[in-house]
Image 1 (spheres, protein in one colour):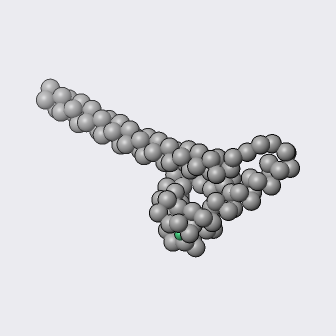
Image 2 (image 1 turned 135 degrees about the horizontal axis):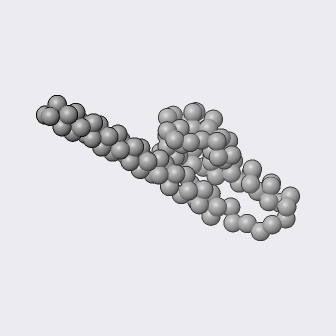
Length: 107
Ligand SMILES: [Zn+2]
């Protein structure tokens, strides 16, 4: 993902509309690109800050952005884990079928 793509995806990230591979690409880019990380911070502060000011609540937005990024990374990791579990299950089913066929044709 390049900076232009990443920048376009910032609003979608902020409204939690990225998932799976797109979320992973976005997080990967933002983690390794200071410019896009900065842009993300600014857009997050503007979007969330205005919202909070309207509601008059206290906030620590930098902290919240960090939490949002960590949460997204957890979701990416979970996505990977589920993927491996799925592949593992498919392999187990395939193995069971092979074993069953083997037994049937032995008899
Ligand atoms: Zn970038």
